[in-house]
Every structure is written in C-alpha cells, then in structure tokens.
Length: 244
Ligand code: ADP
Ligand code: MG
Image (cartoon, rainbow, N blue to C red; front, side, top):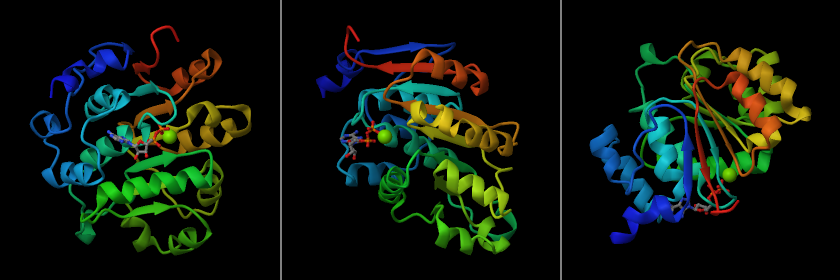
C-alpha cells in the first residue's frame, strides 16, 4: 500500500553508522533481499503482523546483514520481532543431524523472567511448524541441560543474566558457538546491578564472529558508552517523536 512506503518517515527513524542498509517497506521484501524462507514469513502473517513497525523496517535488515546494532525505540514498538525474525533467518533451517549439532547459536538476555517468557511466546509463534529448539533457562530446563547431547540440540537460549551465569558456573551451558547475542531492555542490563553478569556472559561468548545487538526504550549516554565498549562498528537506530 502507499502507507508502507512512507513508514520510515512516519516513524521518524534516525540512523548513524557506516553503510546503513536500506530499510524494508514490507516483510515480503525479505525473501528476495535475504532469502528468508516463506514458512517464516508465513508465521509473521499468521501472527497478525501485516506491516513492519519503524524499528523493524530498519533493525531487521541491519541484523540480517550481520551488523552490530543499538536500537532505541519506545515500549510497544515491536522490538522483539525486530530481533527474533533476523535470528531465525540467520539460524537457517533447523539442523537435526546429530553430527552437525553444535549447541546454541543465538542468545537473548532479558532482565526479568517474565520478559524472558514473553520473548519465548513470541519466538514460538515465529518458529511454529519448524524444528528449532528454543530453551528458556530456568531450574527445570537447566536440569535437562546436564545431558550433553541435549545441550547440543539447542538452537536458541532465552534467559535472565542470573540464570545464565549460574548455568555457566554449573558448566551446563556452552556459549562458544553463539553467533548472535541480543541484550533486550539494555538500559536495565547495563546498569550497575547486572553489569558484572553481562561482562561474564560477553566473555563466555567466545566466537570471533559474534554479532551483538542492544535493544532499549531509552539508552542514556552513560549506558550507551558501556554498550559501545563491546559493539563493533554498530549501526544506531533511533525511533521516536520528532522532537524527542
Ligand atoms: P517492545 O519490545 O518494543 O516494547 P513488543 O515487541 O513487546 O514491543 O511488541 C509490542 C506488541 O506489538 C506485541 O503485542 C507484538 O505482538 C506487537 N507487534 C510486533 N510487531 C508488530 C507488527 N509488525 N504489526 C503489528 N503488531 C506488532
Ligand atoms: Mg521489549
């Protein structure tokens, strides 16, 4: 529709960084531009999402181009899908032959259990009919991960910092193969109370091609400065009102 093409302006998106990719005007552009499978786009439609929101128009291509990202957009603006859709696109088809299983390749960190659960629900909608193994870390799932073979089958981990750090200390998660790390509600995660845990998590994600992104409704300068210590040539996407 005509509206779709005016969306980036309507959402007042500002970007900084080198080689910012062109935003998408519609989800179906993702099949030609990034070979996103039709099953995944079908699940987006099934979830009732007909057009990308502002943060999605710009954030999705940035993540699909494997760039680091700092995305700042208001609460309720669809930040969850802005990272989940690219993650599923980048994970590719679920790998289910025993020899190819390396363990989790994507990690989402959220400040609270409740938010982690909401992210999980959104992820299940997108992953419907596809065989990715998604785990929210808690006592029960952590127990199942004591089995090394079970651990290798996981594709995506969603967790709070505390659950992850304790699982790392127990030696039941291995983050060596994580390629995509998302810090959701980054303003809270990079506050004093969580910072030590986030540093431990960053240190444990040892893959040289690790892509990192922070998502937040607000990112005060001091917090962004912390994010910039670990983001590599990030693109910064800010969605907001004209004068904000
Ligand atoms: P945020 O993390 O920015 O606060 P959420 O990711 O929780 O926002 O999304 C807020 C609501 O918008 C959710 O109910 C979600 O299902 C819905 N939503 C996300 N993307 C779209 C879209 N493209 N079109 C319509 N609704 C959407
Ligand atoms: Mg959110």
